[in-house]
Image 1 (cartoon, rainbow, N blue to C red):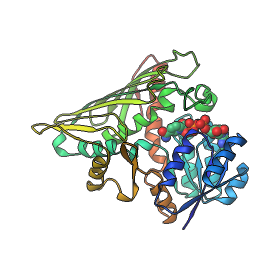
Image 2 (image 1 turned 180 degrees about the vertical axis):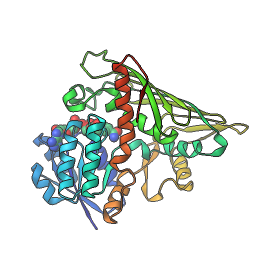
Image 3 (image 1 turned 135 degrees about the vertical axis):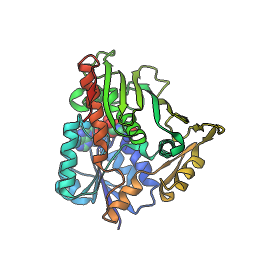
Image 4 (image 1 turned 180 degrees about the horizontal axis):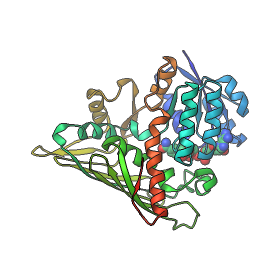
Length: 350
Ligand SMILES: NC(=O)c1ccc[n+]([C@@H]2O[C@H](COP(=O)([O-])OP(=O)(O)OC[C@H]3O[C@@H](n4cnc5c(N)ncnc54)[C@H](O)[C@@H]3O)[C@@H](O)[C@H]2O)c1
């Protein structure tokens, strides 16, 4: 089956999706795109060999809809696609808060359509293999995670967006808009989070747009994580992470990129380090990634998130990362903001 794909939104992230589609082994064709910015829509349509069409017309032409607009438009467009029985891929954060995200999960599940969320770090070999190592019985109990994520405030340079400082369109700042990725992979690697506390700042002066968020997350297994998420003005630092995890008998360190190394050490064993294709192959050999999804990127390797989505549509089976998988991260983020509103009081995530 050739999956006919349409895009709502033709900005920054849709270009990344187009790259993954270009290198996907799954049979598909981008046939229609829509963006209220007509010139941008036409340029994208020309690049991918599709037609720029109206919002409603797009739904008549496709089997799968990619929702890559700013966050506040996600719910309405996902609902429109689901009502028509179309598969839908939606960018992260799914919504401006967990309540809306839950409604979106309900909508796609009630419609029974294939759905996937753009939590792309789940397809990055460093996180996949770190999760495998953490689950090794030799590691022992999780002790602590130190997770720092910083980038320049993304209203400049290659992002060039204004909506990221408009809470009507983006919801909140760095913790929701960017670090939902970090919260998601931490709970995916380390297990459910039971409670949090947090502090946020709005140093740039945009109301409700946190540019500093510092959070403590308590895992059900007794481990604890600290997350520091920063939007600064150092345009030389586009998006950088520094991540260290300690279990009783395992140390892990990584930078969260497709290029950098995953370094680890079990008690009594030498330090090991893998990166790029070698690390991706370790994920495949461990049975936690598919060779068909291997995507070589400049200097590194990833797993193509779109091939399994397209395969799921062709084979009428669930995608590997349905919307429902994003709910824990949304609840944790909401709880951190609730804690910050109460001067850092401990807030349960359930
Ligand atoms: N997975 C990731 O790592 C990642 C990275 C960047 C952005 N994102 C997410 O992707 C989404 C878009 O971000 P971006 O950086 O591409 O923003 P962008 O500003 O570059 O593009 C958004 C586009 O959506 C269009 N749009 C708005 N309303 C629309 C509608 N109703 N129908 C069709 N198009 C509409 C805008 O005109 C704009 O062209 C956001 O949710 C963002 O959080 C994810």
